Length: 114
Image 1: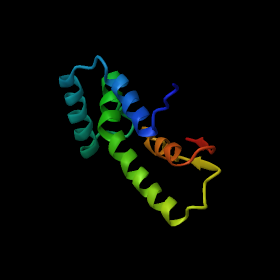
Image 2 (image 1 turned 135 degrees about the vertical axis):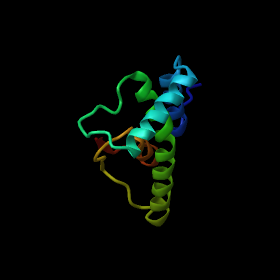
Image 3 (image 1 turned 45 degrees about the vertical axis):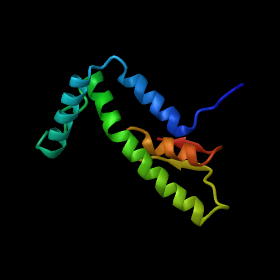
Image 4 (image 1 turned 90 degrees about the horizontal axis):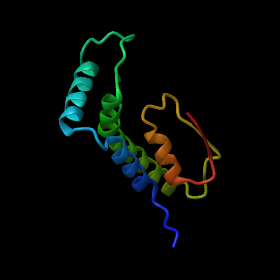
């Protein structure tokens, strides 16, 4: 039997793979530092995501909430306009890609540009 993961399950699995091998203490420290940078006066030319642990921590901290917020908004749009479906999706700023994941889960057969 060929089982296909839902978009949310696939996202969770991808994040788990990204976090695999990253000590929780290191991830926590990276998240704390990233939050401090965003709230502080970090120069705009300074790298925010410095290494793999920063990338993994950022994705694990931000991506699930962003995905769920966009998924919820798209569900409301689909309910309000059930006959409409996008042919393309442009994600300006991209970030973690959470919006693109949410769009992929809401509609099939469209082209995404980040």
